[in-house]
Image 1 (cartoon, rainbow, N blue to C red):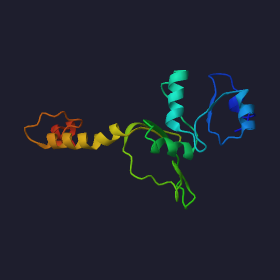
Image 2: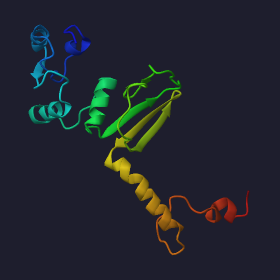
Image 3: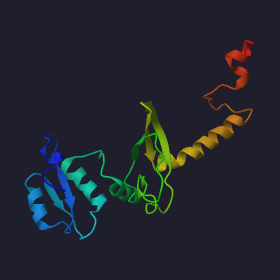
Image 4: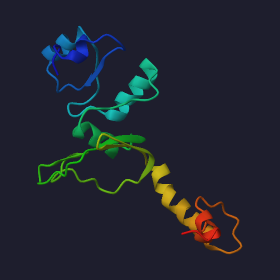
Length: 178
């Protein structure tokens, strides 16, 4: 992370750099001239929950978009700090133990458990797909709600709303066409 990066030369919102004592003091001094450098407790990785709390309290940030690569994303997911994911689906299948994944190389990026997602939006453009998913409780509850609606809709006495009419009610069959 050097002061010559375009990020530090682009006007706009304040730039905040979170670090720990592991960052050399000389680098912190150089960055301190062009950014608000926040030294968080500890010598290892930056505490992501603490960093987000500082952004909320001191900078009034309500939503943080994090584009820091697999290590940052894995840390946010493991700390359960992700509420939404935007994914670009490209027409390429990666292979091998070193293949990139959302959380890092395939051979080392395993989570302790699966994390439910709920598709909010999908757009296809130029051979790629752009998906937005909600993460966590909203994604976890959706299959149960869908199963309950399906059970209710399958009962003859059910008054559950139907998204798709049954085949006998389709205009083509009702009119004898087809």
